[in-house]
Length: 319
Ligand code: COA
Image (cartoon, rainbow, N blue to C red):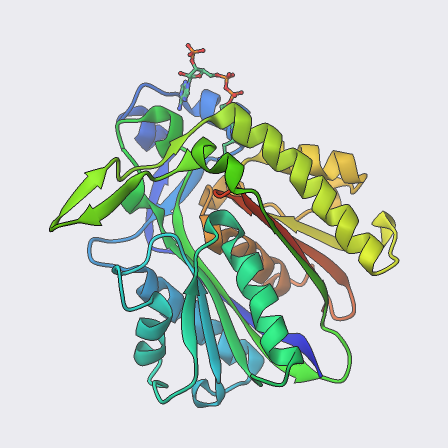
């Protein structure tokens, strides 16, 4: 059995934070942010709104779209860097909020901005092995909680949100192939180097980043992993109907598309309205393009993640 995307959903918190708002908070300008990143606004979770709350709304929408009842879900995977708490996992909390706590496996995946792609790859393996029938795969983040709002070099880049898909079995793919990679040798160029320790926080509990190094690494590996996925399926670049790269920065997205010779008309871009929502970004963009009718049944969609670790990966899927 193969796994097919049966439905998608997403959810964004109500509060919009524009570049003009940020101009009042740190020494930045709308012009700097737009030209360097393409981002115009991002969403910020309300006080007390947790990753599992955003995940719950996105999951409900994906289940509705799939026509699958929550009680049929037998695998829950949540990709998040900003879990509700140290433990239990956000996936277990989501399972409980969905009212389906009853024995099926639920766990989080921590691969930062590659999280959704990692989670899809893991769910696909469960499905192919016959270990799950209806998998709920979610990316959910409240990045606003791990940003230093005085650090202009990072706080303008990220936002909060969630996206979800429901996978169901089918005789044909569906997910054609998945490709995951990591190189921990680059862990220092993007990290939150803090931890909960003896009742306090030790280290630095906010995002720190070498922006230039991240930029160069991301463009290189996104193009490489796309070629790897195409080769594994004996497909040409021209057969990619839609490219959905991690939504970090319009310049990374454009550079990747250029390297792959995929015209921007076939690239889904949401970064201008969401900023970088880390593990949620690919799922959010996928849902938007499915719902507005751009992505149609039978089309080939390349999902790509890249992020802290460093981690990267691709999922090539026929819709
Ligand atoms: N507003 C105004 N100036 C800012 C700024 C802001 N929000 N943030 C940084 N700057 C300043 C820096 O202090 C630096 O000033 P200096 O030269 O006086 O030291 C200067 O802008 C750097 O400018 P530049 O070199 O032109 O920036 P850039 O083209 O490298 O763009 C990033 C910076 C962060 C946008 C870019 O490196 C990037 O997108 N990196 C990838 C980030 C990312 O996607 N991370 C997540 C990946 S999962």
